[in-house]
Image 1 (spheres, rainbow, N blue to C red):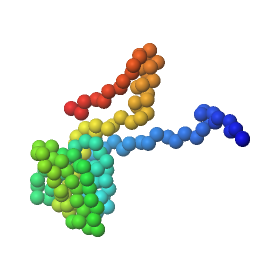
Image 2 (image 1 turned 90 degrees about the vertical axis):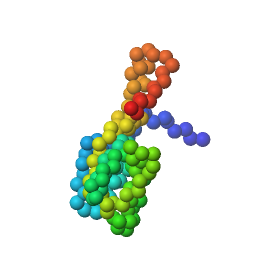
Image 3 (image 1 turned 120 degrees about the vertical axis):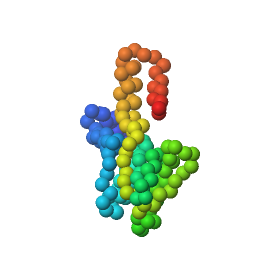
Image 4 (image 1 turned 30 degrees about the horizontal axis):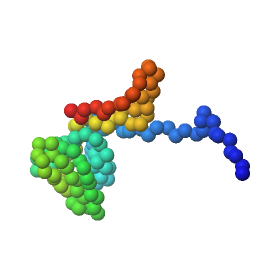
Length: 138
């Protein structure tokens, strides 16, 4: 049986942490079909509310929980939980005139590295029974 030495963690290749794009406050250009599709992919991954302006002038503020990409913009839809009602809306991309990332991104800065940094800061300070609780979403 051959034993392999334990690798030195200081010499291992370490991947850089993933960078999150800061979208809060962003108003994307929706000039082309590709820009619309890209914006709604980002909106789907965003953990805050967005404001959608429809071509008929209606404004919907809410949370995007799904998107379905079809062959055309009319066949592609975004699904939203509106902030001011209990229902769900399905809006074709072709009906959308504008998109704005207006709500606070509730996931910003809340990754594993941030949690670990907080844990070690508290442990180094001598705290016992450390339990990091999630922040309120309000």
